[in-house]
Image (cartoon, rainbow, N blue to C red):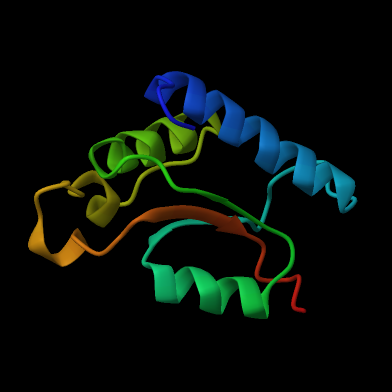
Length: 106
């Protein structure tokens, strides 16, 4: 996803998540979780759940991508998610946006 605008990345990601849900017999994204995670957390989620859809945008675009994806899916942002900031020390290791449904264990 190099050299793409954050808006186009968000559209592509939403399309991929909806397509994935449809392939697994879900007409909606009900129950899916969207999280910003580190490399280790991503690996753990991928080992425990299938399917997953992840994105690895540039660090400076990660939080904006997360907000746009949730907006396009009409999902509310929690207070914690609203306060996400790329410069926050607690979020420095976060590098992926991942979507998964906790009902689908491997």
